[in-house]
Image (cartoon, rainbow, N blue to C red; front, side, top):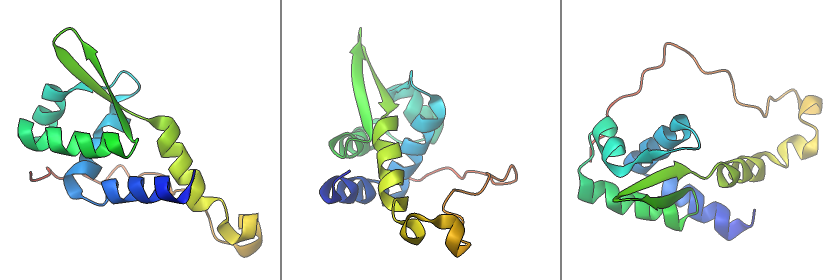
Length: 119
């Protein structure tokens, strides 16, 4: 991943609603979700959601596809994994075991709850 792509992705995710939308789409899997279902799940108005999906799409983090009269959005897992790799590729100069710092994410706590996101 190039620097400009990483900056665009990080900028897109640096907003509470967009981060929630992206995480929700990652959770939904490759099939994705319709715009209406995303809005219902996150309690985000349609116009607001459209704006945020456009920003995530411009950053390459989500893709949309038209099926009949519905637009389905899904996370771009390749872009997500590319961003994670870009952020961690030089962890401890490529030898994370040598410095004692774990460069892999910690297991997710089951006690953590997601809050509803304001528009």
